Length: 312
Ligand code: PBG
Image 1 (cartoon, helix red, strand yellow):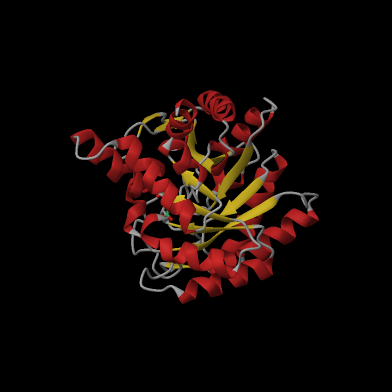
Image 2 (cartoon, helix red, strand yellow):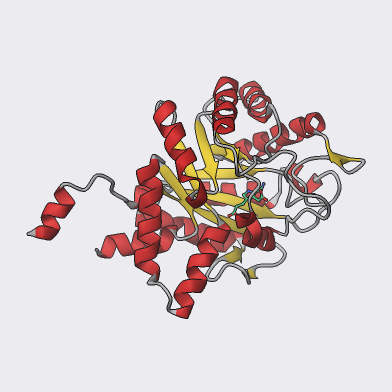
């Protein structure tokens, strides 16, 4: 009786539909990612299998990250119509699954120096990067992406992408903006996965200071004005107050939180040592992110969680 009563009065529920699963896709070096146990760089056909599994498990969407065969100073592979992401999106879309396909729009894994934009004299050039991001988003939309997710944190990127999508017949493609992206050390394992660590300097010029909360509202309002359909806060766990604030003050726009690679790997490492119980810690973390006010959570735990929830 107590169990059912607890369930009846439960304020926050977590279900597979709340989850989005990030997937790394590559043609050149598939395999395990050292810093992220049980996460892999996948081939395109593996990504299609994962899409089927995710749809079967009731997960809402996949967030795709491409790892190109080669990198250069202009991020050329990000602009190729037969790039790894375009081909993956097409292959998944051919399956006709009930699954939202989101693509990451940023040049850092395609560019030789690993920064999120075109660089001149060691400085990221915001305005030269905008057309590149817009073109990348258009290519993803051409191949069938439902949502594009610009993560470069360039000023006016949402506007540039919206214009490009609208003028190329993709009015229906939504933009999930990484509006509130902190300069965080929790991205470390991701950079190992995607090979996108900056070769010099850091991202503090364009990512937010973890000490700031109110600044997040400014970022959010700029992105809403530029046409963002969904907003993201990243990372999630160390920024629950920020998630809460945005969800309270801008409740009309869906909020997505990214439970990032460092948050994932910490839990996996502790669980492996037997210090914590993986399933219950993960469910508690994801519930807390939902409780703070996030509608959806992007998490590397998504497929496991969907399985655990189906069993319970
Ligand atoms: C690329 C990007 C990053 C992440 C998502 N998109 C890396 C970064 O900003 O350095 C991090 C995701 C994660 O850590 O799981 N701009």
